[in-house]
Length: 119
Image (cartoon, rainbow, N blue to C red):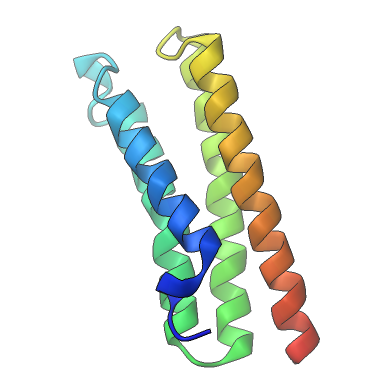
């Protein structure tokens, strides 16, 4: 790996952030500093932590940041369900986002396994 930008999971998570921003701009104005802010920050956290961990050049530190990314995935999972329950997302939008989030989660899990084997 040359940089975090070479990782497919980083690229996919960047796309996911863009989708989150595009969808949450239609959330109610009163959610601007609530759920909208929370879900955006958690989504940005995924590729940001992958990048920061990869930049540390230590497998042990990289793992720590990958686990933080996984935590953000679980946070977003919860926030998406809340958004669905409040009718801020359609069932279709929810399912598409959840599928992509699951794919990112599986990729990070695979990366964690790979990095652990190098330790």
